[in-house]
Image (cartoon, rainbow, N blue to C red):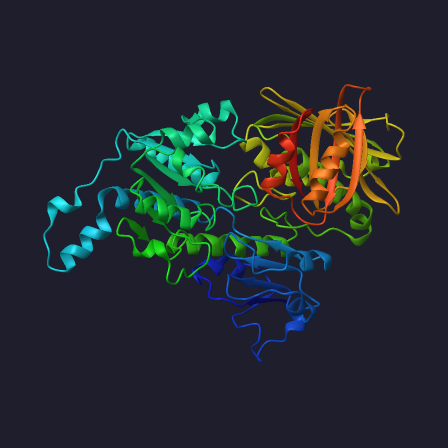
Length: 524
């Protein structure tokens, strides 16, 4: 008998798939309830209230699957679950429509002053001239981030006769054409848009993306929306530009700190807000509950799950053999993604040596999961990696080669974009771990972990010394440095490792040095 604990308030109708599971006992109690024997629980269903910690998992030795009825998994210690062989699933697209609709409703309300006019009439006023708005028809909507929600918003905007201009560095021209949108760089979108809506994941690169430096690029009288993640827009900078009269208004469903408390944006009449309601529709709550209930049922029926966050359940023997290459693949995919910051049409993976005898298709999916991390606004894992690549118009090729390049095992990847190519080669060495041994044609040897700077430069005397001196003068310790070149006096690279993430100031200073071609920050 499967013991399934539903620890949070989850739509009961959505649990119907679990009622169809034979030999299942569904318990609806809190994890700290004395009525629950945690040691016998096989499956745990939660929303955001229950914190699934390492300590809680220690009390649940029989647990095999955790299901989060929602998109995020911030309340689940995924690493702790993975270490225990517990699969974690979520519902990544259950609230896509609800969030897109909420964003559009906020946009229409903002442009027509609906909340302000509503409150005015409630106060027994009739100020028609004070609340004259603007039409959406003919306006240019700038969408920053073209994932599922951004795509759905674009569809609705076009129906209303809006022009849609999109910034997404990973959006190919072909996909943009198919979606009927104009793809531009961020500066162009900011300059041309009448309304700007952000729909990126919150990462180190997107935090504060709209800030005191980028807001002056926008049109005077622009409107901003954030129904994605708090922190993408610098909230204090937004308040400043609204008070200056440059930004006409803003609609926010999310804040960097929630609830926002005594926030300056809440004091501005031209700002409309909602308490993180993007996913709060009956349909969305039913959808996410049904999705995760179906995932749990199919897991116990020994069918593949579709929305795994971590590793699928596999035998311990197979897991131990594949584990080091699985991690290497994810790291290589992430490095590729951070080094080729444009749309990619093709990924070619070559396996050689001992790794070629393993389940390489699984490793390819792991590499794709690393590649898509932070590129799109949903979690990508080994289960949905190929589907995501197909959805994004990326051709994935895999082959076996007898050329090991002198290593016992080797994974080589070539990423091709519309006007760029990038290659990477990695290996796993017993007792040394994963190593990157070639980066874009340069022989090198570094451990893919932590905070890295990948610097392309000309092989001139003193370049490496100047870089080291500048970083040292700023009081920053270089943990490790590796260099590579193709020929004396030609192109060269260096990869620097740091204990902490390198900030913009260092990158800006180094970028201005003679003989420095480019700098990429890599966070692993």
